[in-house]
Length: 94
Image 1 (tube, helix red, strand yellow):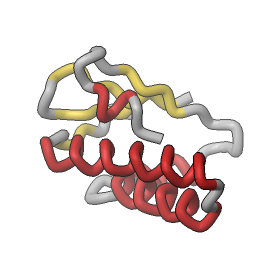
Image 2 (cartoon, helix red, strand yellow):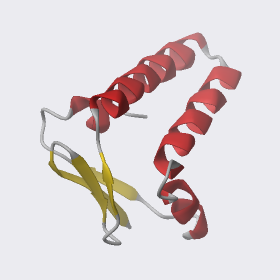
Image 3 (tube, one colour):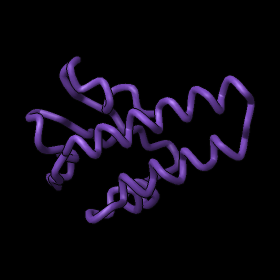
Image 4 (tube, one colour):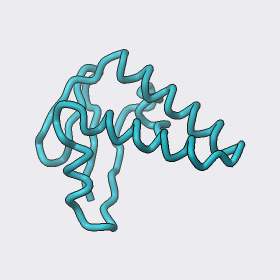
């Protein structure tokens, strides 16, 4: 299991020790992905769900390679998100 933590409002940290900034732009992107996911799921638009996954992977991988790191793990790797309740964009991301 890997853990993605948001212990301060400006950074994210992976359980491997890697850190990256966490900005309002990141929050806006994640909120948009959550909306897109729910809309696509309700409408049963498979292609749109795939696109949300691609965009989420791109965000995870951006600049620090966290998406690729997840792909290198076993097929049963769990990514646990740990954040305070006010970080809803992170907690509600698909």
